[in-house]
Structures are given as C-alpha cells and as structure tokens.
Length: 327
Image (spheres, rainbow, N blue to C red):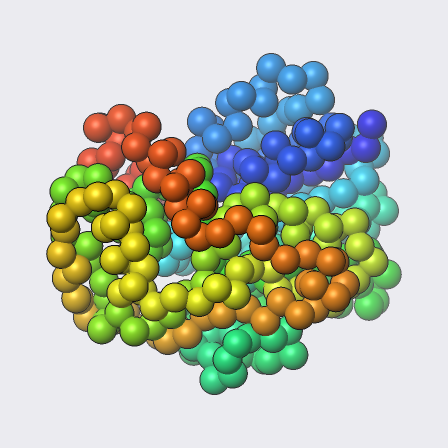
C-alpha cells in the first residue's frame, strides 16, 4: 500500500484530497495544526485502518516513520480574512513549512506536490493568465503575505528540483468552491450564500465588474491527482476558465437561493485583482484535464451543504478564534 502525507489535511481542499487518496487505496497520513482547518472535515476517516492524523505545525521539523511515497503540501491559510489575522503564520507555512516538506521528500525519496495559487499573478496585466506570466504583485500590500509566500514557495520547490533532483510538482490553484468551505472565511461564494441564508443583502466590493472563475472541488482534485502522477515539474494552472463578474455572480446566488436580497456595493479592498481567469491549455495538453462540473451544478451542491449547517454556525462571524494564537 503506497503511503501519502497530506499537510493541511483538515482544510477544505486537504480533506477532499484525503478522501480521494483513500478511495485510490493509499495509506493516508493527515497533518494539520487546525489553525484554519476543521476536524469535522476528516472525522469520517478516523475509523479507517489506512488513515492516521498528526496534530502538527509543519513550520516545525516533520518526522514520519517508515517509507513515504508522496507528499501533498496544502498547509496554508487561503482566504484574505486569514492573511490579516495571522500574517506571520501565512508567511511561515509557505517558507519554513515548504522547506521542511521538501527536506522530508528528499530524505524519503518521495514525490512532492505543492499547492501554489493564482494569487502569484497578483492584479494581472495579462488575461487570461498563463503559466509563462510572471505576475503583478505588491510585495508590501495586505495580500503580499500570501502572494509573496507562494511565489517564494515555487522558487524553493524548483531549487530542490534542480539542485537536489527531488521529484516536485507545482499546481497553481484558481478559485475553487464546494462542500467544507468555511461559511464566513471572507471569500465571495461562501460569503454570498451565508448572507442569503441569513436574509442579509449581498455585499459586493467595488462596482462588481471584477471577474473570477470558479472551479468545483471535484474537478480540482482530479486535476491535482493527474498532475501528481505526471512527469511534469513546471507549474500548471488548474481552474475553470468560465469567467463571470462578481456582480453577476451575486445575482446568480440570489436566484439560486430564491431570496429577495439586494446587491449592496462597498469599497474595493487594496490590491484586489480586477480579473482572474486561468489559461488551462497546459493542463489540457499535458494532463488531458479540463473541468466537467458546470457552475450551475456545482453551486446547487454547495448550497445544499450550507443549508445543512446549524443556525448557530450560520450566524458565527468566523469559525476560528485566533485571539489566543501567538504571533
């Protein structure tokens, strides 16, 4: 039985990846310090003989006994509300944490895939964004702690690949959604659905003309799986190129939830990208991958998940309390 380590395993994407590799017959070692992850996302796996969980911060030395075939490094805060609350941890997990994971991969002769992001493109001056574009990032802006950490992560990963001959893979993840997202993590989709469920008006930043491209989580996981099993070491975009403005997206949510909320405009945050759309030509050519789930279908599944949340959870300002976490 092949063995895989998934860091950030209790998070939105990490938990879905644990599910996929359990289904593929792997022995899954899940690792998370639960600063943004939720144990509820992986509780259903604890009863399985081929699953174990480590409560551990990857910015500290990582010890895994025995052989290890693969590593998926997905430990990182992934929403703007988290960057502002824990900026130092955001920087550390993609620098020190990545260094520790790459060192482990080298020691175990394991293949490692690191989770990068479309945010490395910043507020893009090229549209759609392809892997050859170097980006337009403000290194000292409020989003810089995430954007630059991920850019450094890519550089460190390629250095280990080139110098130490570690088998590395880099996935640049565009906006992804689906069950197990934190309802109030500050990202557009859960924010809009949460507001609709609470009977609040839908808050759109700026004039709503900025665009995003939303990929359903099952499609993303399939792309990541194919990339891990490929022999391609250069970064690859994984996302859905079906682009939509944020205002149009808010109106879709109102229609989906059959509510009577109004769209309310608020000031656009600093450095918020005006456009976001992946060029997935490389993924199509190399991985034979493209998204299959339409936004209409994916939103319906996600809405059903959020509707099942308790009223107490629905009205929480945020699922995580960072007040006692040392900075």
